[in-house]
Amino acid sequence: MSQRPVVVTGGAGFLGSHLCEALVARGDRVVCVDNLSTGVLDNLSSLMGHPAFRFVMADVSRDLPVDEPVAAVLHFASPASPSEYLVRPLETLAAGSEGTRHALELAAGSAARFVLASSSEVYGDPTEHPQAESYWGYVNPIGPRSVYDESKRFAEALSMAWCRHKGADVGILRIFNTYGPRQRLDDGRVLVNFLVQALQCQPLTIYGDGNQTRSMCFVDDLVSGVLAFLDSDVVGAINLGNPEEHSILELAQMVLDLTGSPSPLVHSELPLDDPRRRCPDVSRAKCILDWEPTTSLAAGLLSTLAYLRRCSSLSP
Ligand code: UDP
Image (cartoon, rainbow, N blue to C red; front, side, top):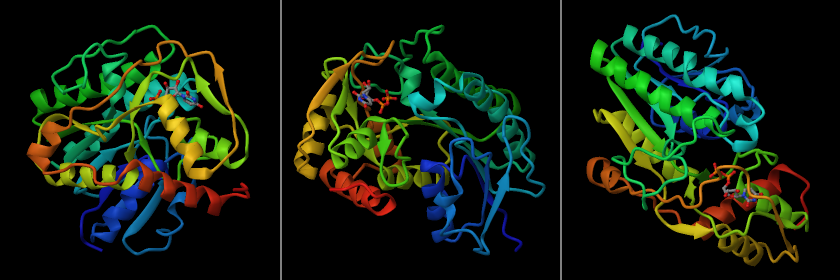
């Protein structure tokens, strides 16, 4: 096949695998690079054997072994859930630093577009609401979460340095909380935890008082935003997420209503530096990419619930 591939690092993960599927579905050739540290091959089952898809097992922070000209590089490789990155601190920092450097080198070698999967975590525990791209963030550089926050902030700085000093075509996506099918059952993030707990009639674990907020974007919406950004020539950072903000207690109640589960709520300690409020300002994405999320929280939760029921023996 002569068509240059789009390289997706972290392509066996939750977001990466949906992205690989969407790219192949629209006619792109895809090379997925993953070390399966937190991603799983099962996520790629619909793509394995497809002529437009190739899987490369590699740790992008050591090496990015793609020996052909590429059309674009999407750097999504990194542990992403707090429970994942807190137990993989050095791996997380390496994915953002050396991993980003390797991904930039690969893209620049083909004068191809580079898209960094950054995060709303660059805003830390924000003091401005909603968070616009112009906000510089409020991050504890030595707290436990810093391994992820600063990894993404360094990755952004490195990407912009390549853009300014080497002329690289660099786009940065600040991805807010996203949920949907293929999040691992033990992923640890809030909605998958609540859904699994509700299905198992276990208590829903509320960290702290539950008044902290998050804004939850369904994965299909996120992926359509990533594709629009990839196809654009936007340089610099843009937020992607759903601006509908809910408290954690509201999310728990929605899950209980949806599942009809009798699970009680239990409170436990709030993790250190847990952001109190998070909500994206997506006006830049709306204006420049003509993108906004369209999936309601109820519809997204139902789809995730159906997936969880399919992939496990969880009872209703
Ligand atoms: N959270 C919770 N119970 C859980 C998992 C998470 O109350 O079982 C809270 C967590 O403290 C945070 C929010 O839900 O305030 C979102 O956490 P998550 O790990 O999903 O992602 P984060 O936005 O912190 O990266």
